Image 1: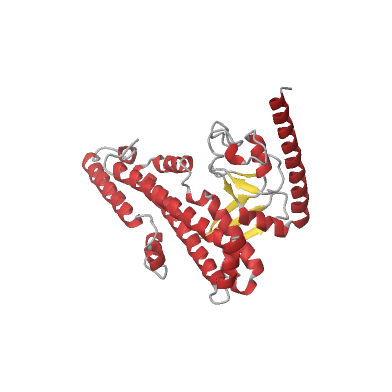
Image 2: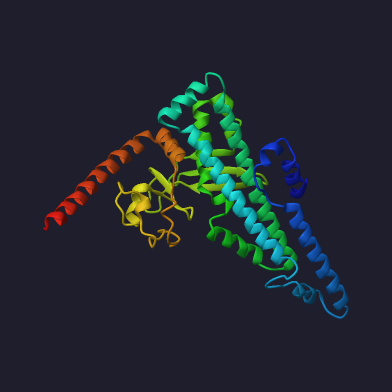
Length: 332
């Protein structure tokens, strides 16, 4: 079955009521725009090509911009990708907040479980969110590939880079990693109910480069490296910067020249990501609570060692900071 048919079947399948609340890629409509563009290029080429070879025909479609479809195509696709990323991140944030609730909210949720199976409802919604983001990501990838084929261009490939720059590349969202960690945690605590749901995700922490793997349709595989690029060790207390790169909290604080107890929100707007060198990526950093819980469960001794070391460093930094503040106040 062609992907277009698969995607339409997905939109109008059993999840249709769930998808009514969310944006999605208008795959069928955008494909029609490209089909119209291709037919116009083809007819123009047939009229002009009587005495020319096939290379001349292909050159007719080598546009830096296509006046017929660019205005509709890229602006609409950018808006759709932005809306999908916003819907996905806000819903996953809400979902995981229920799973890792603390204090009175956790007590209320535990009490509700006596009357209603909230855990399975949360797991099912998470599964639908994974399908939602992966199907839309594949739709965007397919339609951009189709655009480049029709126009013999690289504009579709360049558009992917723009999506990454605007932090709306769906499969690079830190919330997808959090959702994967949630399922692996859920699977360990509720084996019979969740093994079917979490089979899309796997996590291997035994190798020199620990990775989390997500298996996607079309035999695609997405891998997330769980090694901190600063300390070159397995992530501890992981945080994702808004550019998508993952670091240990203490390492990210060091890179941003702030103390651990101050947190990443105290970083200067000019502070840059150590990998991509993008500025202003610390203020909206995501604390990866589910991923940290997964690492805590699977690497207990390592996690305890890092916890002790981070607390000791935090106490030392706090002492040095307040000593310097005291000396400043009394005039030393």
